[in-house]
Figure 1: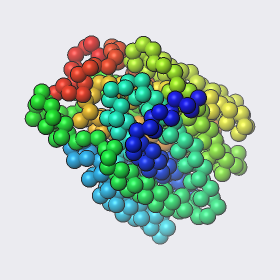
Figure 2: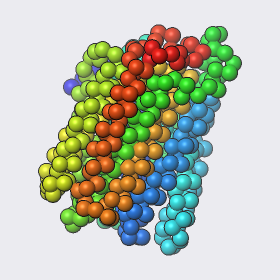
Figure 3: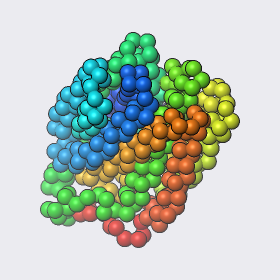
Length: 423
């Protein structure tokens, strides 16, 4: 199954930026559960943990597209290095405020201040899109690989964060995440030979591109608006699953097991992503996207049934693994659509917008699940991811006319994407 992926790494520099990006993304997967455990342990409130996480994610969701636009304009390395170094400051501030018993509002302020987060996953996909711009089948393979690597991080990250927080100190997970993330991002930025060209360099070699085209938002493309809203609902699935699963395991007296349960969700998605990448795409990407969202909505009924039925952790783990298999095809095809419908000079911003939708969804799902965990039975929280997946399906169906076309040959060089109803 892994043999088709080998040809991706025959291109010079691909192994280096992939491994560096993997290290950086591992820290992101550690942060969510580490923050929840830190605040729940030191302040005794899942609701506070959920809303602090939500505040930070909303700030990142606002800042990430702006960082993405700067990346498109000035290049990945020139933006990533100062952004990473800056973000270490609010992280240290948060840890100090928690440790010293500062008022709750300081936690919101510190975590929201760390909003200059580069979208490392989007940057890696932008590199693949540039390197494979004339090989659509390999782009599908690369997107599947990147999604599987994301899920691999979310398999290892929560487990590592939970182990550090519960066996070393509640602050250990966040400290490790900050250090690993900074090193990985700086190593990624150092890989200059695979870095895509900036908007200015692209414009200089494309006479058909108007001088003001690079300043226009990718959200002018209706398909991106549909995808962003669908990803927002998908983010609610992720956020609610994470916090509900931690609360469910805690209610059964096995909080350390929560990291393993969350890893099972990511494992299901990782396996599905690897298998999906080996399948030759058939039909329009928009149709494949709809099928993926529908499968995700159906599979998320399984953890709901297990949670409401009072199932043990073993049966819940099986349900979470199965539910995870529905997310990777949706994410892979969504990112493929973005690469097909947006020009190269706007890819970082466009993918940052999609990820921002996920971030806002995660924050919303975390806040709702945190409140529900304190005022209802632990299994009731699984209503939120199931309902969010159904909402994602409704949004995708409502906007399906904008998702119905395949790739446009002129997408890399046209002044701006066509925004007509043929999408």
